[in-house]
Image (cartoon, rainbow, N blue to C red; front, side, top):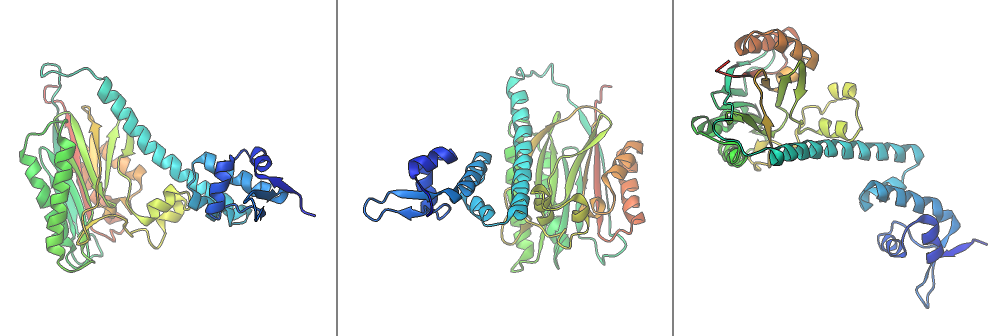
Length: 356
């Protein structure tokens, strides 16, 4: 005869509250073995303890109930992979929040600056775009100015006009004085305008759109707006750091631990975008502020570079170049040496102290 435990005894054994057990019953996540027809009192079998403890552990991880249900339906090895993937995603999201928290701590702790103690830096910049060795036309657009840096990678039958329209919509920012206090709002508004411009180019086609990565200079900081798989990097203190996250299916699988970097490099859907400017709208861009110091070298590029030239080689070429113009030519040349199957576009900007 199967031993049954009262809901109180079962709750104590599993460290789940009776309230939680009643909820899991309603959600068909953990049904009781028997419900008294007269009193409605729930009883659980001893062999349900392992499942209940697993549910409790997964809840302590913060896993949503819908995903817990899916994990509980799998065998041990598959369930372990799902937990690993979930935790990889949590760590990736935590890293983003940690960076934001660090910025807010620095921003709120800093004493108010005055005109006398603010060091105004400048950008020295260059841009270069190349059709590559395979594509029949160049659908990338680049722009580099005293305040605005931008790279867009169009796709579809009117991808070139789409990327050009997106960048053109941002150019108004290059002629306006901006401060760190309102730069993110200005940049977000401009990206919405870029989305409207792309919709005008796309017409009725769902196959036309563009990615967009832009940096807006305030004199001491750079504001970033990013949609898609164009990228932004900064080279500082001898290291190269990527400051954007690709909005692609493959990147989401990497974040969840479902793919290794090696597998991602050859995945058949590595170019499939999750976010882009297109006829269906302008999704909210990733936006953030980045402090800049003299000596920083920023790179914006299309995936025609990042997809064929490893980051280590990009770092070496950026370090070796004496100026932004030399850097963009070297980077595009490296992509061509690697076969350049896609359009290749780079913008490089150096942060300099004009008084030095």
